[in-house]
Length: 379
Image (cartoon, rainbow, N blue to C red):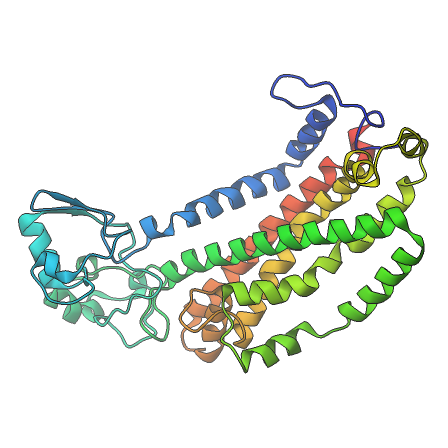
Protein backbone atom coordinates (compact mmCIF):
# COMPACT_ATOMS: atom_id res chain seq x y z
CA UNK A 1 0.00 0.00 0.00
CA UNK A 2 1.22 3.46 -0.84
CA UNK A 3 1.01 5.18 2.57
CA UNK A 4 2.08 8.64 1.41
CA UNK A 5 -0.82 9.58 -0.88
CA UNK A 6 -4.33 8.11 -0.97
CA UNK A 7 -4.27 7.48 -4.76
CA UNK A 8 -1.40 7.54 -7.22
CA UNK A 9 -1.05 10.97 -8.75
CA UNK A 10 -4.18 12.27 -7.02
CA UNK A 11 -4.40 15.07 -4.50
CA UNK A 12 -6.06 14.28 -1.18
CA UNK A 13 -9.11 16.45 -0.44
CA UNK A 14 -8.30 19.39 1.75
CA UNK A 15 -10.23 20.29 4.88
CA UNK A 16 -10.31 23.28 7.14
CA UNK A 17 -6.79 24.46 7.87
CA UNK A 18 -5.39 23.11 4.58
CA UNK A 19 -4.74 19.58 5.94
CA UNK A 20 -5.87 16.42 4.20
CA UNK A 21 -7.59 13.69 6.24
CA UNK A 22 -4.37 11.66 6.07
CA UNK A 23 -2.27 14.49 7.47
CA UNK A 24 -4.90 15.19 10.13
CA UNK A 25 -4.55 11.60 11.33
CA UNK A 26 -0.77 11.99 11.35
CA UNK A 27 -1.06 15.18 13.38
CA UNK A 28 -3.39 13.43 15.81
CA UNK A 29 -0.90 10.55 16.19
CA UNK A 30 1.88 13.06 16.82
CA UNK A 31 -0.12 14.82 19.52
CA UNK A 32 -1.14 11.49 21.04
CA UNK A 33 2.47 10.87 21.99
CA UNK A 34 2.35 13.35 24.87
CA UNK A 35 6.01 13.05 25.81
CA UNK A 36 7.18 13.59 22.25
CA UNK A 37 4.68 16.37 21.56
CA UNK A 38 5.60 18.40 24.64
CA UNK A 39 9.29 17.74 24.03
CA UNK A 40 8.87 19.30 20.59
CA UNK A 41 7.01 22.27 22.07
CA UNK A 42 9.66 22.85 24.77
CA UNK A 43 12.56 22.48 22.33
CA UNK A 44 10.94 24.86 19.84
CA UNK A 45 10.25 27.43 22.57
CA UNK A 46 13.85 27.27 23.81
CA UNK A 47 15.21 27.63 20.29
CA UNK A 48 12.97 30.62 19.51
CA UNK A 49 14.07 32.29 22.75
CA UNK A 50 17.73 31.68 21.88
CA UNK A 51 17.23 33.49 18.57
CA UNK A 52 16.78 36.64 20.66
CA UNK A 53 19.85 35.97 22.80
CA UNK A 54 21.13 39.53 22.31
CA UNK A 55 17.99 40.81 24.02
CA UNK A 56 18.31 38.32 26.89
CA UNK A 57 22.03 38.32 27.68
CA UNK A 58 24.10 41.33 26.69
CA UNK A 59 26.40 43.93 28.20
CA UNK A 60 24.77 46.66 26.12
CA UNK A 61 21.40 48.36 26.62
CA UNK A 62 18.55 47.23 24.41
CA UNK A 63 17.24 50.77 24.04
CA UNK A 64 18.58 54.05 25.35
CA UNK A 65 17.51 57.67 25.32
CA UNK A 66 20.45 60.06 25.56
CA UNK A 67 19.99 63.85 25.34
CA UNK A 68 16.73 63.40 23.48
CA UNK A 69 18.15 60.94 20.95
CA UNK A 70 16.90 57.38 20.62
CA UNK A 71 19.68 54.78 20.51
CA UNK A 72 19.73 51.03 19.93
CA UNK A 73 23.13 49.95 21.30
CA UNK A 74 22.29 46.25 21.01
CA UNK A 75 22.29 46.62 17.22
CA UNK A 76 24.55 49.63 16.55
CA UNK A 77 28.16 50.22 17.67
CA UNK A 78 28.14 53.82 18.86
CA UNK A 79 31.55 55.45 19.44
CA UNK A 80 32.28 56.54 22.97
CA UNK A 81 32.56 60.16 21.85
CA UNK A 82 28.77 60.22 21.62
CA UNK A 83 28.78 59.92 25.42
CA UNK A 84 31.65 62.30 26.00
CA UNK A 85 34.49 59.78 25.72
CA UNK A 86 37.19 59.19 23.14
CA UNK A 87 37.29 55.43 22.43
CA UNK A 88 36.14 53.91 19.14
CA UNK A 89 33.78 51.45 20.88
CA UNK A 90 31.68 52.24 23.94
CA UNK A 91 32.05 50.13 27.05
CA UNK A 92 28.57 50.36 28.52
CA UNK A 93 29.68 48.55 31.68
CA UNK A 94 31.98 51.44 32.54
CA UNK A 95 30.69 53.36 35.61
CA UNK A 96 31.37 56.66 33.84
CA UNK A 97 29.26 55.72 30.81
CA UNK A 98 26.44 54.41 32.98
CA UNK A 99 26.46 57.61 35.02
CA UNK A 100 26.48 59.74 31.87
CA UNK A 101 23.48 57.90 30.41
CA UNK A 102 21.59 58.02 33.74
CA UNK A 103 22.15 61.79 34.08
CA UNK A 104 21.11 62.59 30.51
CA UNK A 105 18.48 59.97 29.76
CA UNK A 106 17.66 56.36 30.51
CA UNK A 107 18.39 52.85 29.27
CA UNK A 108 16.66 49.46 29.17
CA UNK A 109 19.08 46.64 29.98
CA UNK A 110 18.78 42.90 29.23
CA UNK A 111 17.87 40.68 32.21
CA UNK A 112 21.35 39.11 32.05
CA UNK A 113 23.91 41.96 31.93
CA UNK A 114 26.60 39.87 30.23
CA UNK A 115 27.25 38.73 26.68
CA UNK A 116 28.97 35.45 25.87
CA UNK A 117 32.37 37.16 25.70
CA UNK A 118 32.02 39.73 28.50
CA UNK A 119 34.99 39.77 30.85
CA UNK A 120 34.03 40.54 34.44
CA UNK A 121 37.00 41.84 36.43
CA UNK A 122 34.96 42.38 39.63
CA UNK A 123 34.38 38.83 40.80
CA UNK A 124 33.90 38.03 44.50
CA UNK A 125 36.11 34.93 44.19
CA UNK A 126 38.91 33.87 41.82
CA UNK A 127 37.87 32.60 38.41
CA UNK A 128 36.21 30.24 37.73
CA UNK A 129 33.81 31.75 40.23
CA UNK A 130 30.84 29.70 41.55
CA UNK A 131 27.24 30.82 41.04
CA UNK A 132 26.49 33.96 43.05
CA UNK A 133 23.69 32.25 44.97
CA UNK A 134 26.29 29.87 46.41
CA UNK A 135 28.40 32.70 47.84
CA UNK A 136 28.13 34.26 51.28
CA UNK A 137 27.67 37.96 51.93
CA UNK A 138 31.17 38.01 53.39
CA UNK A 139 32.62 36.81 50.07
CA UNK A 140 30.57 39.38 48.13
CA UNK A 141 31.30 42.28 50.47
CA UNK A 142 34.51 43.65 48.81
CA UNK A 143 32.86 43.86 45.37
CA UNK A 144 29.56 45.09 46.82
CA UNK A 145 31.29 47.94 48.66
CA UNK A 146 32.93 49.13 45.44
CA UNK A 147 29.45 49.28 43.91
CA UNK A 148 27.92 51.03 46.90
CA UNK A 149 26.37 47.99 48.56
CA UNK A 150 27.13 45.45 51.28
CA UNK A 151 25.71 42.01 50.30
CA UNK A 152 25.52 39.66 47.34
CA UNK A 153 22.17 41.20 46.42
CA UNK A 154 23.98 44.45 45.56
CA UNK A 155 26.21 42.98 42.81
CA UNK A 156 25.37 41.64 39.31
CA UNK A 157 24.69 37.93 39.60
CA UNK A 158 26.19 35.03 37.72
CA UNK A 159 23.41 32.48 38.03
CA UNK A 160 25.56 29.59 36.75
CA UNK A 161 28.93 31.01 37.77
CA UNK A 162 31.79 31.98 35.46
CA UNK A 163 34.29 30.01 33.41
CA UNK A 164 38.06 30.15 33.72
CA UNK A 165 38.23 33.48 31.85
CA UNK A 166 35.57 35.24 33.99
CA UNK A 167 32.84 34.92 31.32
CA UNK A 168 29.25 34.31 32.42
CA UNK A 169 28.29 30.64 31.99
CA UNK A 170 24.55 31.27 31.58
CA UNK A 171 25.14 33.75 28.75
CA UNK A 172 27.47 31.32 27.01
CA UNK A 173 24.92 28.52 27.38
CA UNK A 174 22.21 30.62 25.70
CA UNK A 175 24.43 31.64 22.78
CA UNK A 176 25.99 28.17 22.55
CA UNK A 177 22.56 26.53 22.42
CA UNK A 178 21.62 28.77 19.50
CA UNK A 179 24.79 28.03 17.54
CA UNK A 180 24.46 24.28 18.14
CA UNK A 181 20.84 24.12 16.98
CA UNK A 182 21.42 26.38 13.96
CA UNK A 183 24.42 24.30 12.93
CA UNK A 184 22.42 21.10 13.35
CA UNK A 185 19.38 22.42 11.46
CA UNK A 186 21.40 23.68 8.49
CA UNK A 187 23.51 20.53 8.33
CA UNK A 188 20.51 18.22 8.66
CA UNK A 189 18.42 20.12 6.08
CA UNK A 190 21.11 20.44 3.40
CA UNK A 191 22.55 16.96 3.87
CA UNK A 192 19.04 15.47 3.77
CA UNK A 193 18.28 17.29 0.52
CA UNK A 194 21.48 15.97 -1.07
CA UNK A 195 20.90 12.49 0.33
CA UNK A 196 17.31 12.37 -0.96
CA UNK A 197 18.43 13.48 -4.43
CA UNK A 198 21.25 10.92 -4.57
CA UNK A 199 19.03 8.11 -3.28
CA UNK A 200 16.26 9.02 -5.71
CA UNK A 201 18.60 8.87 -8.71
CA UNK A 202 20.04 5.56 -7.54
CA UNK A 203 16.73 3.89 -6.85
CA UNK A 204 14.83 5.16 -9.87
CA UNK A 205 17.36 4.42 -12.60
CA UNK A 206 18.97 1.36 -11.01
CA UNK A 207 21.37 -0.71 -13.09
CA UNK A 208 24.87 0.65 -13.60
CA UNK A 209 23.85 4.03 -12.13
CA UNK A 210 22.90 2.37 -8.86
CA UNK A 211 26.00 0.16 -8.91
CA UNK A 212 28.39 3.07 -9.57
CA UNK A 213 26.79 5.20 -6.85
CA UNK A 214 26.96 2.37 -4.34
CA UNK A 215 30.67 1.81 -4.94
CA UNK A 216 31.32 5.56 -4.66
CA UNK A 217 29.38 5.81 -1.38
CA UNK A 218 31.27 2.88 0.07
CA UNK A 219 34.60 4.60 -0.64
CA UNK A 220 33.39 8.08 0.31
CA UNK A 221 31.81 6.93 3.56
CA UNK A 222 35.05 5.25 4.61
CA UNK A 223 37.02 8.50 4.73
CA UNK A 224 37.70 9.45 8.39
CA UNK A 225 36.01 12.82 8.83
CA UNK A 226 37.76 13.69 12.09
CA UNK A 227 41.23 13.18 10.61
CA UNK A 228 40.30 15.36 7.66
CA UNK A 229 39.16 18.17 9.98
CA UNK A 230 42.42 17.88 11.95
CA UNK A 231 44.43 18.19 8.73
CA UNK A 232 42.41 21.18 7.54
CA UNK A 233 42.78 22.82 10.96
CA UNK A 234 46.54 22.85 10.41
CA UNK A 235 46.09 25.17 7.42
CA UNK A 236 43.04 27.31 8.23
CA UNK A 237 41.17 28.22 11.38
CA UNK A 238 37.95 26.19 11.38
CA UNK A 239 34.89 28.43 11.64
CA UNK A 240 31.14 27.88 11.51
CA UNK A 241 30.85 27.68 7.73
CA UNK A 242 34.14 25.82 7.26
CA UNK A 243 32.98 23.10 9.65
CA UNK A 244 29.55 23.09 8.03
CA UNK A 245 31.08 22.63 4.58
CA UNK A 246 33.35 19.80 5.71
CA UNK A 247 30.54 17.98 7.49
CA UNK A 248 28.24 18.37 4.46
CA UNK A 249 30.77 16.52 2.34
CA UNK A 250 30.13 13.34 4.33
CA UNK A 251 26.83 13.64 6.24
CA UNK A 252 24.60 13.36 3.15
CA UNK A 253 25.15 9.59 2.85
CA UNK A 254 22.98 8.90 5.92
CA UNK A 255 19.67 9.00 4.03
CA UNK A 256 20.78 7.61 0.68
CA UNK A 257 20.09 3.96 1.47
CA UNK A 258 16.61 4.69 2.88
CA UNK A 259 15.48 6.80 -0.09
CA UNK A 260 17.11 4.39 -2.55
CA UNK A 261 15.11 1.49 -1.10
CA UNK A 262 11.84 3.43 -1.39
CA UNK A 263 12.49 4.31 -5.03
CA UNK A 264 13.59 0.77 -5.88
CA UNK A 265 10.39 -0.55 -4.34
CA UNK A 266 8.03 1.87 -6.05
CA UNK A 267 9.58 2.41 -9.48
CA UNK A 268 7.83 -0.63 -10.98
CA UNK A 269 4.40 0.06 -9.50
CA UNK A 270 1.53 0.17 -11.98
CA UNK A 271 0.87 3.89 -11.59
CA UNK A 272 4.54 4.64 -12.33
CA UNK A 273 4.40 2.55 -15.49
CA UNK A 274 1.19 4.32 -16.45
CA UNK A 275 2.85 7.70 -15.93
CA UNK A 276 5.72 6.64 -18.22
CA UNK A 277 3.23 5.46 -20.83
CA UNK A 278 1.51 8.85 -20.72
CA UNK A 279 4.82 10.50 -21.57
CA UNK A 280 5.67 12.09 -18.23
CA UNK A 281 9.33 12.90 -17.80
CA UNK A 282 11.49 11.01 -15.37
CA UNK A 283 11.98 14.15 -13.29
CA UNK A 284 8.22 14.67 -12.91
CA UNK A 285 7.57 11.02 -12.04
CA UNK A 286 10.29 11.14 -9.37
CA UNK A 287 9.09 14.44 -7.93
CA UNK A 288 5.31 14.00 -8.03
CA UNK A 289 4.70 10.25 -7.75
CA UNK A 290 7.69 8.75 -5.92
CA UNK A 291 9.15 11.48 -3.73
CA UNK A 292 6.11 11.75 -1.39
CA UNK A 293 6.59 8.09 -0.43
CA UNK A 294 10.30 8.60 0.25
CA UNK A 295 9.62 11.73 2.30
CA UNK A 296 7.81 9.63 4.91
CA UNK A 297 11.04 7.84 5.78
CA UNK A 298 13.04 11.05 5.42
CA UNK A 299 10.88 13.02 7.84
CA UNK A 300 10.99 10.12 10.29
CA UNK A 301 14.78 10.21 10.34
CA UNK A 302 15.14 14.02 10.42
CA UNK A 303 15.05 14.53 14.23
CA UNK A 304 17.71 11.86 14.69
CA UNK A 305 19.89 13.38 11.96
CA UNK A 306 19.56 16.74 13.73
CA UNK A 307 20.53 15.04 16.98
CA UNK A 308 23.65 13.58 15.37
CA UNK A 309 24.60 16.92 13.80
CA UNK A 310 24.47 18.71 17.16
CA UNK A 311 26.48 15.92 18.78
CA UNK A 312 29.11 16.20 16.06
CA UNK A 313 29.67 19.92 16.65
CA UNK A 314 29.76 19.40 20.42
CA UNK A 315 32.34 16.63 20.05
CA UNK A 316 34.57 18.71 17.78
CA UNK A 317 34.43 21.67 20.18
CA UNK A 318 35.26 19.39 23.09
CA UNK A 319 38.32 18.06 21.25
CA UNK A 320 39.43 21.57 20.23
CA UNK A 321 38.79 21.21 16.49
CA UNK A 322 35.47 23.01 16.35
CA UNK A 323 34.56 26.67 16.49
CA UNK A 324 37.30 29.29 16.98
CA UNK A 325 38.49 29.96 20.56
CA UNK A 326 36.16 32.33 22.39
CA UNK A 327 33.04 31.23 20.52
CA UNK A 328 30.11 30.23 22.73
CA UNK A 329 30.11 26.46 22.62
CA UNK A 330 28.61 23.71 24.72
CA UNK A 331 31.48 21.39 23.84
CA UNK A 332 34.02 23.97 24.97
CA UNK A 333 32.11 24.29 28.25
CA UNK A 334 32.44 20.54 28.77
CA UNK A 335 36.16 20.77 28.05
CA UNK A 336 36.49 23.51 30.68
CA UNK A 337 34.64 21.29 33.14
CA UNK A 338 37.14 18.51 32.46
CA UNK A 339 40.08 20.85 33.01
CA UNK A 340 38.59 22.44 36.15
CA UNK A 341 37.37 19.62 38.34
CA UNK A 342 37.25 21.98 41.33
CA UNK A 343 34.57 23.98 39.49
CA UNK A 344 31.82 21.35 39.10
CA UNK A 345 29.25 23.89 37.91
CA UNK A 346 31.02 24.02 34.52
CA UNK A 347 30.83 20.33 33.71
CA UNK A 348 27.41 19.84 35.30
CA UNK A 349 25.92 22.77 33.39
CA UNK A 350 27.28 21.55 30.07
CA UNK A 351 26.16 17.98 30.74
CA UNK A 352 22.63 18.92 31.83
CA UNK A 353 22.06 21.28 28.89
CA UNK A 354 23.35 18.85 26.26
CA UNK A 355 21.56 15.87 27.81
CA UNK A 356 18.27 17.78 28.01
CA UNK A 357 18.59 19.10 24.45
CA UNK A 358 19.34 15.70 22.92
CA UNK A 359 16.65 13.99 25.03
CA UNK A 360 14.02 16.44 23.81
CA UNK A 361 15.04 15.74 20.21
CA UNK A 362 14.91 11.97 20.71
CA UNK A 363 11.45 12.14 22.29
CA UNK A 364 10.23 14.44 19.51
CA UNK A 365 11.68 12.06 16.94
CA UNK A 366 9.73 9.17 18.42
CA UNK A 367 6.54 11.21 18.12
CA UNK A 368 7.33 11.95 14.47
CA UNK A 369 7.92 8.24 13.87
CA UNK A 370 4.52 7.46 15.43
CA UNK A 371 2.89 10.10 13.25
CA UNK A 372 4.13 8.49 10.02
CA UNK A 373 3.69 4.88 11.13
CA UNK A 374 1.30 3.30 8.55
CA UNK A 375 -0.02 0.86 11.14
CA UNK A 376 -1.29 3.77 13.24
CA UNK A 377 -2.21 6.09 10.38
CA UNK A 378 -4.48 3.58 8.65
CA UNK A 379 -5.75 1.82 11.77
